[in-house]
Length: 394
Image (cartoon, rainbow, N blue to C red; front, top):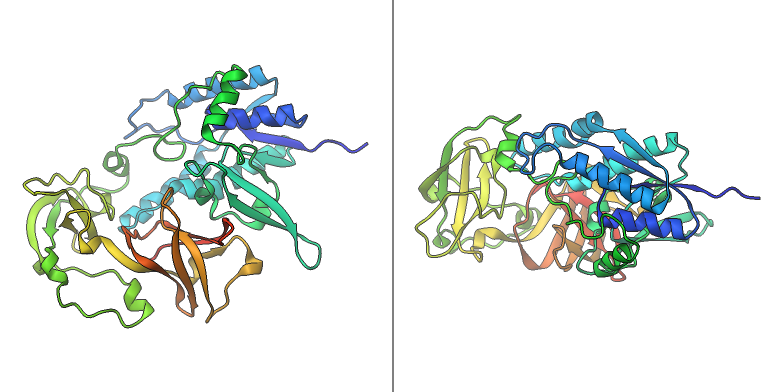
């Protein structure tokens, strides 16, 4: 008689992973829970020191209610090395990283998976709203597909955009075919302690933070000028003549605008940011359109339709291009149409992907607001399968 595969559910104390665990148990799976602590330092966090302890307590209660074994693992050292240190490094360069994407690639489906294997796991399951399918190639080998979650308001496939075929082979997403209201209903009907728990916010496993205070642990404040760029700056500018020019953000100089305020350090701000700039006296809100790390300047424009916020193309360096489906990789010189997004929950946009010797260029049909270096661009086929991703270079 074949032995049942053993499944480890990453139980966070939230309702999504709780229902994922419950569904696996109801399906008759051999399942156990593993809670991971990834952060100790509360500097800059807005909810105090005990949030992770409360999450662990709820997770233990959920495991008892469902009737599955509960385990704990501390991954804070590897999380700091692979996620937080990367965050600090990116912000120092004036880029805006996405720690949730890194957490999935480096922690949940790597370090956490290894810890689960030590406890005998054959698969690892999470509470992500996405779907996985398996097909076979011409040589009858399995190929794993990531599809958008059934709930368009909660699709979390974006956060899994850096996973490999090897990682997907042992990954399970039990609630991917459900909507959030359905998950809440299942949790309440089962009497799970997490049924009405609010969704977590902020940085993956760190929580909601005051970002400048959090970053000041490593990046020292350095006051500089805020320069406002007027709309007239863009009048008469020549149209881009190449993909490289189309993807290149405008490089502003101090003399292109006027000083309207001071900031605490260019590394603390991100493209598209409105809050925290401390700028008044304008008819409309001001938004950050660029930062100059070398000269410690940030540039802003008035109004959410300011031309400096929009661009039609972006570039990804060759070494930063990741194909979830290597069998569908676009070769150098190729052009293919996709649907793409540049941030979580952005509606999918029509775009053309150009694979060039100096990198991948994603050219959108319509100008995109707030293309942000350091974030991930992700592309999907018309059926909703996520095929690849990459770190936006410019």
